[in-house]
Amino acid sequence: MKKHRRLLFEFRRRHTPSVKLPLIVVILLLCMIPLEFQGRLLASSSRQAQIERRIIDVQNQCQILSNKISRIGYLANSVVDNAATDTEISTLADIFNGRILIVNSGFKIVKDTFSLSEGKIGISEEIIRCFQGESTNKYNTEKHYFILAIPISETVPVNEGATGGRTAGVMLVTASTESMFTLEENLLDKMALYRLMIFALILVLTIFIVQLLVQPFEDIVSAINRVADGNLDEDIKEESYQETKRISRALNSTLTRLKAVEQSRQEFVSNVSHELKTPITSIRVLADSLMGMEDVPKELYQEFMSDISDEIDRESKIINDLLNLVKMDKTSSEINFAQANLNKLVETILKRLRPIAKKRNVELIFESMREVTADIDEVKFSLAVNNLVENAVKYNKKDGWVRVTLDADHKFFYLRVADSGIGIPAEFSDRIFERFYRVDKARSRETGGTGLGLAITKRVILMHHGTIRMESIECEGTTFTVRIPLIYIP
Ligand code: ADP
Image (tube, rainbow, N blue to C red; front, side, top):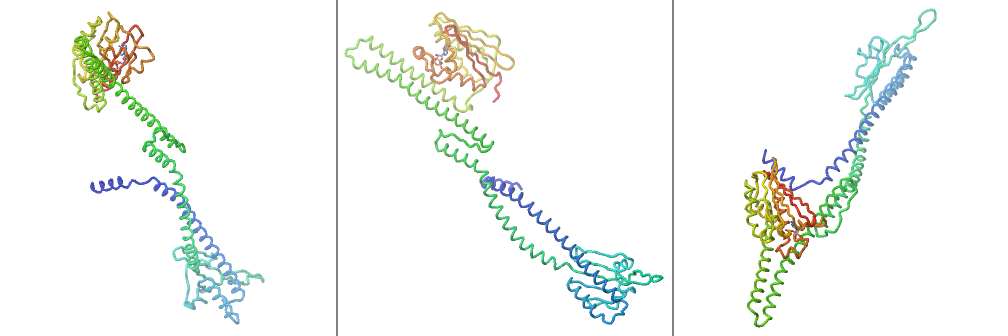
């Protein structure tokens, strides 16, 4: 059973059906079923009408014959020549493809067109009823024949010269309708051919209509293929149906995002090359000038060498930051979450940064509102906090302050890094998290910045399912607020 199901699944996977097939079948069925139904209904009602017409016809003819029989006294045998009437009865029976029996009042069969029962006694329900004045008209639907019992009246004197009618005999007619069906079957054969032609016509029309219906979807596929071939600038515009309109819009918005990603990738590559080239150019200039000078004093030589060493440090810092970013752009599987004491972690970071802060005479304050433990990747989170605090020190004023506050509620912990620094103009506030974006290039360079610090910080916080917000007033200071869930749910 399982094997069968697997085979069926495999078959479906390999031979994915086209939507056209079910559409064609449904339209064909919707057209052919009413046509077939109507045809059958028409055939049966016309057959019924034909049979009724035939019965009335036979009834009328036999009534005329019965009147004649009664007029000429056929039953009383008083006529000289019954042969002519016998022939007439036989001819009528032949015409109707049936049998006529004439029964007299003694239930004796005086005439049988099949000459089988003449002289015998004929008693049947129809004959008895007819003698009682009830004429019968019965149709046997299974064997396709009808029976008619027609009374043969006789005029008899009643009293004082008046005359009256009496049933002197019965004319029993049995006629087959088989011949009518052979005719009908011939007609049906012709109809079958006609139906086949209609079917073929509807099939061609259906295929054409289905092709028209499905065409917009095929157009979308060709447009997507063109885009897949690298034609990213082409817009997918197929608005024949609501559905195709929605598909086109969804694809176009995906395309727009793809284009933005592609553009930012190109920008990133060109930024990386530029940033990596700058220290190398400086090193080259410094080295060239050293080589170009003769009898260089030792102090100048040392100064140049120390500048070259600074540039090498810068280059290696950029490479380190880039590596960090690339690592974090990969899947989050490389994250190592574990419960950590954040108060301790922040204190360690601040301790490490205190010498730099002291150099600039910036006061570093830590405000711990409560003990906080949370699920974090210690190495990555430390990098993020380090970047925020280092920036707060770097972009500060002389004798300024940096306040780091740690707080938590039942769901999140909050880390706030506020400084009394130069602030960030409102127009740049959206861009500072971009890679290599710097408000003041010269100042960033001077302080050893790479322009990647905040990009790394934001990435780390997103990995922790957290958010980062920035508020700043120019020349007054900046506050970064980080909010991260205490428990990490992958
Ligand atoms: P950088 O290595 O240049 O510091 P970042 O990505 O860390 O790069 O920061 C991007 C830019 O945002 C910085 O160049 C600086 O102009 C601005 N910036 C970041 N933090 C602060 C802050 N606390 N005060 C003022 N400006 C800041």
